[in-house]
Structure formats: C-alpha cells, structure tokens
Image (cartoon, one colour):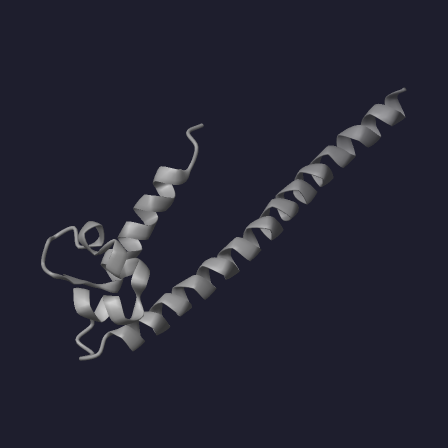
Amino acid sequence: MKPFSFSILRTLPLIGILALATAAQAQAPDAARMEKARNELKKRFAAADINKDGKLTREEAQAKMPMVYKNFDAIDASHSGVVTPGDIGAYMTSKKSARKPAG
C-alpha cells in the first residue's frame, strides 16, 4: 500500500500544474478578445474623431459610434460635452462590473 500512496503524492503536484496551465489557456482567448476589442475601439474612435482632437462630441459620436451616442450622457461623466477613449473605457468597465454576478 505504501508504494501506491507514494505514487499519488508524486502526481498531485503534476495535477496542480496541469490545472493551472489549463486555466491560463482558458484566459488567453479572453485576453486576445479584449485586445481585439481595444484595437477596434481605437480604430472606430479615430474614424469618428473628425477634427482629430482626441475627443468626440455628441455629433461626432452620432455619425460613427452609435453606442457612444446612445449612452453619451452616461459616458460623459464630467459633463464636459465631449468623451475621450478613457471615458468610453471607464463606462464599459463599469457596465461589465455591473453585469458580473455577485459571488
């Protein structure tokens, strides 16, 4: 019985390593998806920013970024009349956090 117990003890760390590797692989697609979304947002923001000042007015958002236009007041937390990529990112993060189940 002792050799069997010793074998199990030797394989437990291996099982742990495999579990961690599997978890890391599961997160990799999420990271890639997030990077793709960030790049797409940058591209769309640049296309919408007609005067290239790094900010979107409500009118600029209406033309090229309908989600930003629809939620403009919520995204423009400082009520400055313009939104930046940082404002949009903060809004999206807050919406994502609100959707996560508690637990």
